Image (cartoon, rainbow, N blue to C red; front, side, top):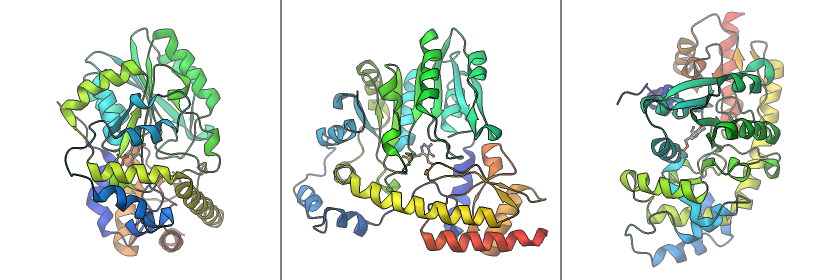
Length: 372
Ligand SMILES: Cc1ncc(COP(=O)(O)O)c(C=O)c1O
């Protein structure tokens, strides 16, 4: 089976450990174990109490009942039984695509977005059409274009809400329109929902609550700041969960007892994690906006309290070469836009720790002055 290289991952694999000021990542500043254990106000006693007596066997294969219960609370219409734990959202996307896509199927994917959503279907033999997002429309895709792309044999529409790299959140209204179009041909709609807009999380609508054939994938990596735990999930109807179970047994077995327990602990302390992250995102957004306002070589469609952004940089140089030189000379890491097939832009993760963000932006501006 052939598959394209994963543009962002191959970039990060080479460069991320060399960065002093990493403002390329899309996670909200990751938490230390110490921070996590302090969430319960008892130094993690509630977590250790559970951990202490646990056998390190395979544990609950699909995720513990407690995990499924906590995750189901994030949705209005998803039964705990229909939540399947996966190895991150990467594992969730892979599971759904592997289970659903067959050679010759027609798949429509929001583009650019998370590369799994188009290159895995292609590798499985699907005929993939891109549903483009447009910078001049606040990085929104156009429904009229979707109507032109849809076919009687469209099996699946893949979206990334909010979008990586732009940080644009799709409105409930737009999602309803997508569902209407998908319904006409019986297509599934998979939405990778790892980025939650933290200014108004309650206003976010999951595809799992909008459409019976909707598949929501998510994880604790971005909104919850613990990518190291490698825990994600799929949230679907019963029929899809059963289908996914079949494929899941071949690819992962489980996420591990320790990770499951920590995931439950984090989800039970969700309000505190979201409050920490809301403050960080809103504070950093201001710093970022001030920088954009003062930097003549940068412009951006501002993300909606989501931890990724895609500014345009005016540099008379190949964007990847620019990013490599920026890293080597200033210690600052970005992801060049060509890794999303949009050169001229960079992914800028403004939800790094505040000090890193401030110094990273300062150094980026110093570097940009060479062209004045
Ligand atoms: C849209 C999207 N989905 C999934 C992932 C990977 O998430 P996880 O760490 O949960 O596998 C990323 C990471 O950048 C992402 O941007």
